[in-house]
Image (cartoon, rainbow, N blue to C red):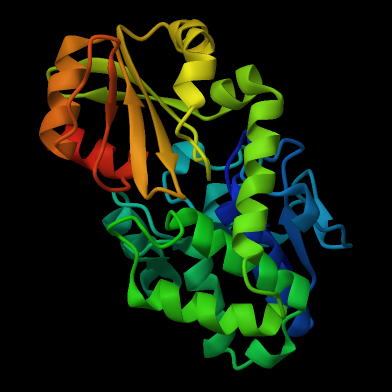
Amino acid sequence: MHTLIAGGEEYIDIDSYACLIALAELFALERRAVSALVPDTINYSVPHSLVVSNEHIVTQCPGESYEAYVVDLSNPDDMASCVDRKKIVGIFDHHHGFEEYWQDRLGERAVIEMIGAAATLIWEEWGRRELKSDILPATARLLAFAIASNTGNFGISITSSRDRDAFAELSVIAVEREGWTEALFREVDRQALADIHTTLRLDTKIAEYPNMGAVSAGQLELWDGASFFQRHMSVVDEVLDTFGAPRWFMSVPCLSEQRNYLYTKDRELQELLSRFTNAVFDEHGLAVTDRLIYRKELYKQFMS
């Protein structure tokens, strides 16, 4: 039986990418026939220097005879469309909302836990299978950086001790020098800003909220985000207006400062965001938080 590792439909970020590569490598060590379904579009959060090329990567689903594992998501609507949902035998995710749905179908093979990074769950799976010592340094580096990135360099509130422990173990295997994550975060900044229009379009999401309707939410994680809106406010206006939602906001988590820069012209969103973050918006629609907070945390606040 062929094993397929899959994630999202349109594009994948560093957490998804690391999970796809690492889980495929793990299963290959167990002498399974395995493929990792990697879309043509990988978003800016994956440093070019960490992109791998191996025989397990595919861009299309295999034939009829396969079983599938899904990583870094559990919403069936967001999964790669070529994956037969009936063939899914396992999920590794850290997002809230579909735990009961998958527990009913997969039982203990539905590993959905509210920690900082899905990459942490994959590394723990390497431990359960007692194969940690066999991981390639390049794959360890991928998982470690995915954990650092998805936890906001360990600054967001959902970061767990499990994330920190996994990062520490993987960093030793990756054999990197001090400051290596900052160098990669700066590489990500350069990639994100090289084509800011495309970056914003690909990393803006629309969600429906009670009593608010559709809200477009842009997020751009940068190591150095302090000057972003000074340089790119007009681009943010242009791009987020194209999504057609009556309300939108833009958040730039600044990892080096461990705080967010927020922007919205919508008064109701300003009031809500101020309530959730204690940030105060100025006359231009800009605010700065006193801590790091990612969009998924704001989503949970909006839903409540």
